[in-house]
Image (cartoon, rainbow, N blue to C red; front, side, top):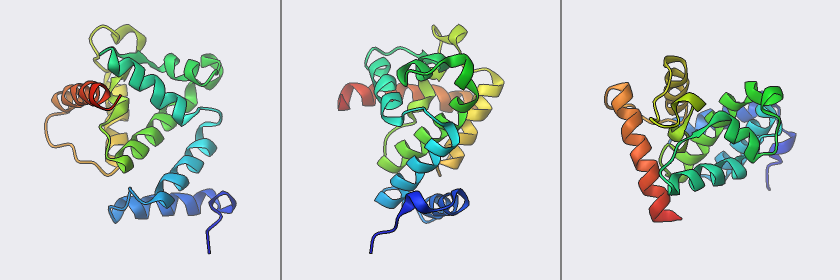
Length: 161
């Protein structure tokens, strides 16, 4: 009997996702489906597939993208939806981890850092919190970890797309 995840309360979906991460079962289709529903509930109209496609497009070009680019990909007004971008990117990170992909969100930075790929302290903290939420380990110094993951995303985009 199939479980109707849409009918589940947000708290129940959070438990399902947390248990899948804890049990290292992020490849389970239930994890992906529950995470996607949660992401939609948390961030409204952001579209995960469009975000991933935009990140991959930039990754192919070895270029960074900004948070507004994420809103634009979903056809959203950045000023009205900017508060939802952080939770949305966290959900993308968890989804990517479940697929065994690199940390796609590592190439999303503030618009004034597009040329370097650096992150502000606040953005780096948010990114690293998202990494931990996805069940991944940070095994080296924070900035070195970010730079390594950015290079992994660029390489993966070239290989996979």
